Picture 1 (cartoon, one colour):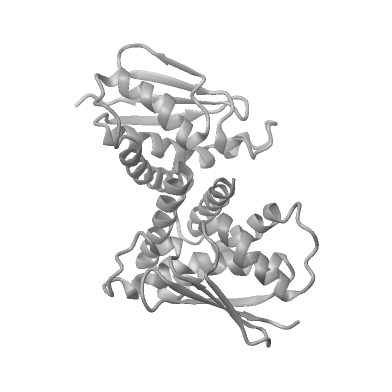
Picture 2 (cartoon, rainbow over the protein chains, first blue to last red):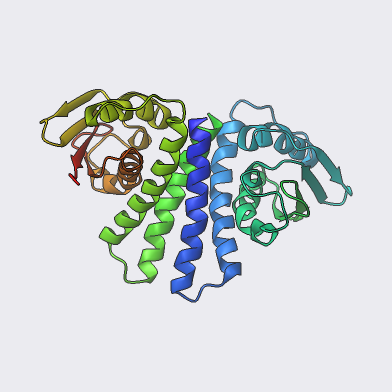
Length: 158
Length: 158
């Protein structure tokens, strides 16, 4: 529990810090999101290396995605993805009905506009994890009702 | 394990970020340390509120210090303080022979000069925790041999 709280508080501080340092300079919202996303990316890279140390080789892209939805998600976000869909052409939609980084926020519509801040790091985590498994992607997140969240992973063919 | 890794990676990213954003501006080393320390302070405040929810009232300052050295330390840094000394005039020295935030660093003298970066957040954590228990203090850290660390807590009489 302690480490969970420690991480959550630090995550909140980080968001505040990035946005605050933007105020002084001329950095706009988009760049803050990018900064948080990039930090997530590097953390995701590190995490996936630890998690897959004793894992068998992955068969294909779908196998990698399943690993991310189950093992990676459970380790990092404390539950599995609730629903994984794909169009079999490189787009995956991961639905999490109770996303960890949003559970502390009010469930009303009031803070909906702030959700991107709280999801940028998470998007980076997923992108970084996938990247280190050899899957280059663009990850975006969308919230319609808190604390549910939909992640869209677009695979970048190399 | 996952949350521990998640926190550690994020902590490292944070340090890098604070120092990197300093390069662009005219912020010097001291201010980076202060920023990290302040973030630790607020996180420490949050943590101690959770940890002490079901705790009995503390008798005195020494009782608070003992709680920090045992319960707080175990929750946040995964082990107890190895040695607590005091001059009974408001100065406490907390010795941790294997401090969590330093265990990832090389034990040689090579990175000794970088240790303040990795301890600033921790100092803030302790100061924030104490502050929310009604004990105003100044916390500094000192390393002579990695990964051992000595924290000095100077109580500020009100």
